[in-house]
Image 1: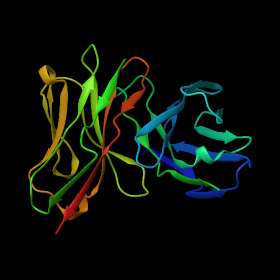
Image 2: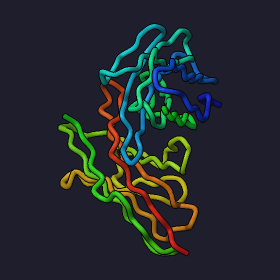
Image 3: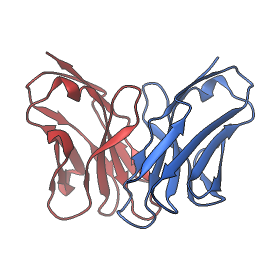
Length: 114
Length: 113
């Protein structure tokens, strides 16, 4: 069966520090991968999605970037964190061109920028 | 552009009472519709989905949802709520082309004993 892992679960970082959040998927090949941010009291905002290695689409201009160095690995990064980067970050995957848009989510990373 | 509206930010019900969470979408063609549930500090779990066919769909945990094209709605229902249903619920629409989902802002459900 397929599983998705995100780490770390919780992270507290000072303003101006770098960020690296990792997401990996097991049990499937060539998944579509997604990064969402959920700010307090708000819905989910799609940040990036990827349909293959090295293929990243950005949905919202921001202080963050994403990379996909391996088929089942998706990394969210920042060179210098801002206070506004605080939030709950969720990674998700879906099967490429199969079961129509169903996305499966990881447990999330709670990021606090102080 | 596609959009999803969940007009109720917060709903409180008593345990055993019935529940209906509202969802309205904006999309030109027949959308793919989803309901997800998020427990505090957790990721999202798929409750149910609608792609085509029967407009009343059954999901996990005793939930169901009805697609009404004329009202552009996909409301989530449960006949008897349990305390463990307290969570945040998200409605989402998928367009099938880009494989992206557009989420509503969520409805937080509180259940009183």
